[in-house]
Length: 140
Ligand code: CO
Image 1 (cartoon, rainbow, N blue to C red):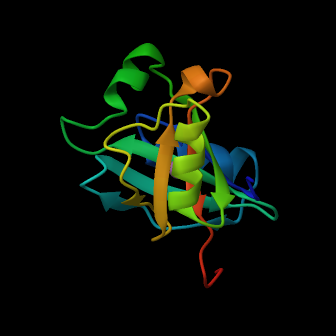
Image 2 (cartoon, rainbow, N blue to C red):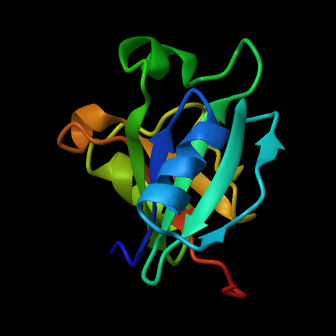
């Protein structure tokens, strides 16, 4: 059912500071530009690794959904993991049929990779917030 691990989401109070860790300490060389997703309430920056990506997310605006996470984890921390699925609607319906809680309205939103995503509540996922993302038709 789930496909590739697409990325690991890491919340941070400062993408600029977090990038220093990935670039200067860990030696990552492929680091994208920071960009805002106002409707999701986050700044986003992707660190590309040979087999996956780290998605750095920083609050954008007062209503950002990650303020609560950072209140509990002031230094930042691992926030979610994202798996690819072939069909987001089929995946959502499958999650619901299996009793899992899809966050929000359940209508997929366009994620940071430009493809539809949903989030599944950690209570159904062994304590991990899981993002399911439709596999990009045109992989980068
Ligand atoms: Co994500």
